[in-house]
Length: 443
Image 1 (tube, rainbow, N blue to C red):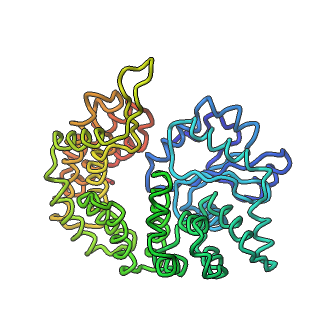
Image 2: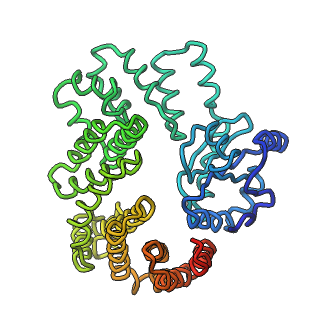
Image 3: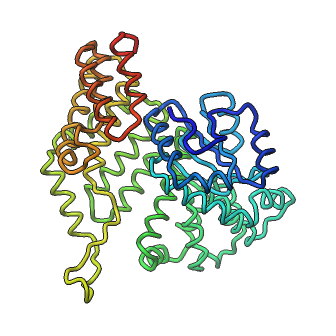
């Protein structure tokens, strides 16, 4: 795995975060902390590519003390706990006092993304800090405006706001529920479906106000509101292992699709699968995964996916013709739906590989994995240079399942294909390591 790139002080682990803070304060720099884990070595390799981008060299050397930690190590666990991080991959931009100025989830090989995130952090370094809000809050400050500002600051860096939102709503007068701006603010911060904040609005706001809110704001904002409610509720449901709340959330998701019943159904079932996998309810997860994928995903063809994408493209809004452009241009706001089907086939095939040793489960996973490869190849292989040998990650999944089924030679053949496909976009190290282990029979 790459560790340096253009970062002379970039490293995997540092014994004490204090050393980074000391260096940050002494050099008047911010801290860049990337948290990773071992669950997706390919994701870590992708991040390494991004960090090595030339565009980052000057910006990060001048403005950041950069560090990298694995959340599976003791040091990584301490860092994750300190900054209220659950899981990885996550990049944090922190000042010398420990305030998070920006947070970026995931990893990317696109260096400009890390450059943009750095600029956001640098733009916030002179603003009121999270620690300032925390001090005032501990001192008893609870005014509505303070709580609004505190909520906005925490949301800015993706920290939970549930408790603060409950306190804010608890201070509102009854007539506040007729205030369009207040309702908009609460919904924008994603009240969870079981929370007092959500229920107060549902049962206390005038009839039709919520519908008017959704109809009057931009579509992107309405979608962001729903996504905030969904993500926050999902997190709470997982933390509490609350199936009733998860089912309630699935119904909410279904309703957000209005008349698009099939899309709403798929989205709600996807949510339940994520929940069941997250709480490790293996039996129900396997049952529902097979019911969904065998009924929908396995019946799809490349042509049927192309038709779905074509229909979605026709439904995209258009920019009217201009004097220099005779034809209207469509605005593509969302990724094509086709990608989710083969991605989910691969994802659930891998999950079955992880959680089951039963031959019947692994055979089912193998079929899903093969379908993901076939659909992906049919959609992209002839049109995307990076995938002219196929999707390396999907072939890696297929090879792992073959290996677990005892079909070692076939597994080696497919893992070899995965290595070659990954070399097209670089950083095939983790796949090559797997290949060696397969050949030695030590995977």
